[in-house]
Image (cartoon, rainbow, N blue to C red; front, side):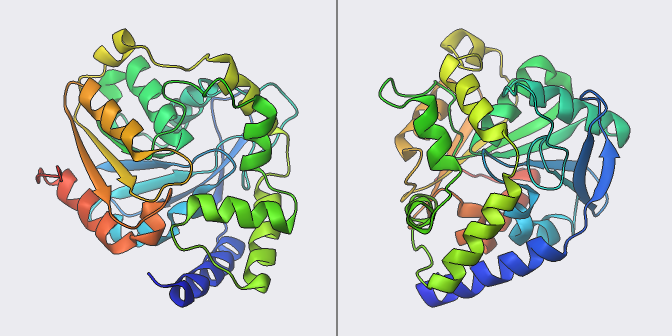
Length: 289
């Protein structure tokens, strides 16, 4: 995807994010409203976004995946259009949210597709509820082995929730292999990003992540026996691709696919190829590259 195309896509992303009205749901997480979209029918896929994001990060995947499956994409508590209570957040608390959402929607088990921190949430869910997980798709999973010692909670929070144009440009350069450069697009993306993150969830989660409360040891990884596909962009500026290769080597039934020339969100920059890969994996195809 060249820069001109990506700028257009970013503008389309903004338009879609502003116009999608997700159905509110009262989840199992202390009675808070959880906003989500629900498309298609068939075996369930749950798309779980990352830190500082919302369900719209999956907009390029919803239509394609829902041609053959029921696809649910929630806004995690504290993000997007879901409630943003003033509370202590932790990565592990989202396991309860996903379980509650599945219960409310009558879903016994599902394929979990998690991006960045959403990948870690998916793994935590699979550890606690292995019989409810058909398979895992982990897209540049983050924080699985904790944060590097040199990165503080404040540094992580600042990086995930930019508040100035300069900070937003730096953020975009980390998540995209070919970031948008048009000043108006960057300004609009910053405004949208600040709206998605208008609560205090990012700072609280950064402290939780730094504490190591959700860090996986090799022993904990051994418990994840279900099929797993780990996907990564070769130009990811947030999580090194080698981290995903390492994770794939430690899981009992994992394959690894690298998208050449993609950044932290290959589901956006390489949407068609990503969608084809997921559809292929659901049908039992060979994903290893």
